[in-house]
Length: 351
Image (cartoon, helix red, strand yellow):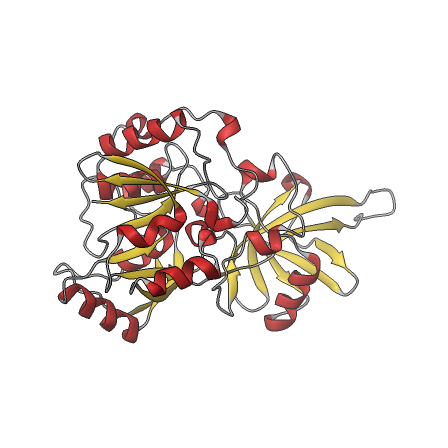
């Protein structure tokens, strides 16, 4: 596969560092399967859908997964080392994988102190440059400690330009997030959906369903050659319940559209659909990788933000719409100064 066809040049000033205010005032680029483009706003979404259509939201909750700590000196002549830790994947109630800086100064057996009574031991070094941390607290106590001492894990293209702050606690979390805080990135298409917009969706007769996919660091990682060769991405935990699967199957049987909100909701559905287009309930990991040429069986339209060039997410939208259509849509968005990435504007893709 020629990855160059998924590249494009994005002016840095179009990377959104904050969301629109209010968040449902973002712009919306409507992309039709025949290549037609319409400039609209996120609050126009209900008029492009029909009563009986179903919007599917990912209700995962983002953990304040960015921590600052200190690795104490190993001996009397050594020095303390300040550390930045970003959690990437939960292993068990006490243990997470993480990225840490400065990684070369951290060894298995070291302890990192985050706050009084809150620390973690480095217990391993999995491949990929991560470390494994076993925290002094577990379960709900660990969640509470992270909430007290962590910051929202803004994606690198924002974090390089400004630190996370108290405002991100609200703006980088969907209003419908569930109880299990295990994501290290937000399902960002859902950030546009304020109570006002959700009420307008309801008033239009458009139904809502929830799935869950815990978003991992792989969302931001560049594609690797071995992933392309294996046709698989990083694993992420997802859940589609029997009840939701049954309602979605019934809606499609009745001629209505299933419209995931965000690529994580779409990946959840596409990882749970059989070759006949019937959704099957599932709970557990998925490493599905959708790219042009792959069958899209469970998605009739998609609400999503604008994605990074050369990323698996841009390849996913090309799988749904066609690469030429999406390259033309992104060229239009850049020329018309749409705001890109997690805090940016949205697309409605109508194959």
